[in-house]
Amino acid sequence: MSPIDELLAAAREIQPEVIDLRRRIHAEPELGLDLPATREKVLASLEGLPLEIALHEKTSGIVATLRGGKPGRKVLLRGDMDALPMPEDTDLPFRSTREGAMHACGHDAHTAMLAGAARLLADRRDQLAGEVVFMFQPGEEGFAGARSMIEEGVLEGCEAAFALHITPIMPSGVMGTRAGALMASADFFHVAVKGRGGHASMPHDCVDPVPVACEIVQAMQSFITRRIPATDPAVLTVTQIHGGTTGNVIPEEVTLQGTLRALSEKSRELAQGGIRQVAEHVARAHGTEAQVEIMVGYPVTTNDSRAARLMLDVAREVTGGSAIEMPQPVMGAEDFSYVLNEIPGAMGFLGVRPKGEGPAAPCHSNRMLLDEDGMVYGTAFHAAMAMRMLETGLPG
Image (cartoon, rainbow, N blue to C red; front, side, top):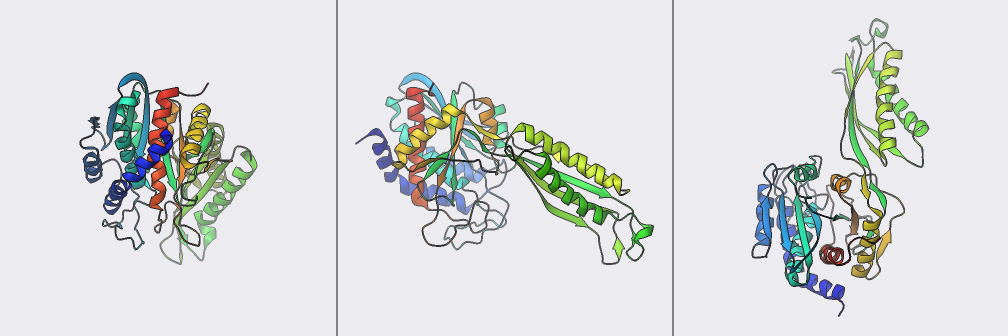
């Protein structure tokens, strides 16, 4: 039996424990940076393992370090733990028991697979030359939990970092990644268009911000398609428009909100400037005023080319060849980007599409399901990735 086959067999052996942890986390989802119940479950799953545990002060983050039998390299594996502020509409027996919170992005699976990998590697501690850092991170969903943990020193001494993200729209057990941009940056904007209100029957006596706001939305879309290169794209989406109180009153103000995604800092900066330029100038042309606020979010998730190549090699071995080099990035965003801005590394996707016919609900859906059998490959992959990195380092 090869080392990879042995790891897969061991992952299947502990799969009931991994699934149990995932389900218990799923049933009690927590949001943001403070996840006391989730932290307690993770710590209980690691109890008895030869790990050095450090609890982060500003967040519920956990750093568990496994020191191998011999000195060597230091590699980090990351799993995020937080849920999304949304209802769950599944009929799972372990569905969320907390109103308005759901593990709809698979972080429960990420955490459980990483805890399982810690058990696999702890059992092989004497074979390891170096250290493995297990980064159990809160606050990925908009709270920049990775950045907080970096500030507290989680990356100190690490030569490379790796992470997995499940996806229910890829076949179960298939893995994928790519060199360079894997996921987009994520920024948010708020535009307040200020006019002068009055009677809806006499718009000439007012300065109506409603048509101005509508024109701004259209002008933003034109800016994106005409000023941002198609080969270095950005996606701008207005997701909310608010204004008015009744049917016969022109409001004083209309507000727009939305999100901006880009695959490079160049296009990101160009699009940010375009939002401000278009909104302010269109508003001024109609005698109104636009106040623009841009909330800068996560940077582009950029895989190191060497780390991505190593990840694909290991993924092919773990999955028996079911690993693909992704032809294009995903326009979602990830705060693992902060880690990859500091040290070389890579993130990849693990398919967990549920069995059965019909389209699967994607991440962030209130009906998202996953095939738990696919988690075996994630557990084994984490362990295999750490062992390979400690053994060979990044390829030249």
